[in-house]
Image (tube, rainbow, N blue to C red):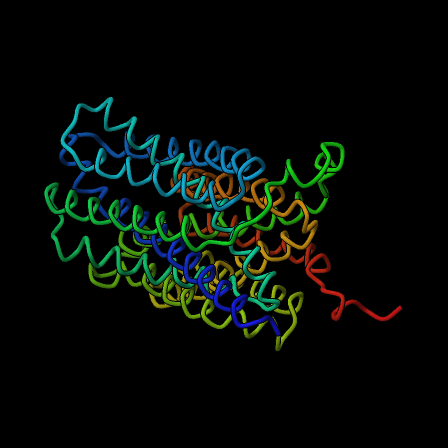
Length: 391
């Protein structure tokens, strides 16, 4: 057991990482749920909004690269604080009534901050989990999901107008600043990589493992983006669900994501990491197949709920496993694995949309189903030493 002083420092670091995950989840939810009001204010169409979302994903990939560069030199704590501050700068700019060029530029800046935080908070989460000696990442990601729900409710409370969106975005910016302060004061302090190891050793990253876990993250985000972007549209337009039923697909999805993240840390210990990944992947693949093959509102809502199991379990478990590939270089490994996040998000939103006309939006959900089935090939890479088969 760690000494009392060490335990207090670890608890503080855990709180800081939880705060950063929560700020990230709340800020992103406020931004995406404010899109209709911002779209009306800027007088742009859905095509322009799609291009903005695509731009954010691309800039987020750049942000992940920046997080890696900052973490290598100054540590992931600095990268995380930087990403939160960048978001805090961008959010009020998005909220202000500005010319479209400034508005679009603010979204690009937000994307950089988003990617920087995505990568750096995972680095910090893995570092704190390693210091604790037990699984914590599920709880961290659950904080992001719970905060996202709060963010969506915040936008609902202040009303779907440009003024209300501005208030919500300003609140999110203030929370991001507060989280950055907490991170600077309490987050895990690591020795910067370039001061701890020679350059030759730093260059030897576990590339095969990065690709395996990166492709798992890609598959999960194909499903996540597909559900987030198209679930309500599919239920309302394709299945003619009532207006109050259409949002239930996404609500069910997020509810399952939250619940599974809350129990993932315990399940990893009880079930085993590899077996848990196999179960979660299978359940979500079945859910996506139900959406594609059973064109009924009730079946679709159940399918969306089952699809949430993969995002709830696989994202924290995969980042945790990636961090174990090479503990001395875990920040660099995680930054590279995180890049697959944005590729999956783009594929899930864009490709599913392109398939909406032919063969149809419902059947297009066989794409995330197939991507998740492919994850089963990677299950052996999730085995810990205690799960490895006897020789």
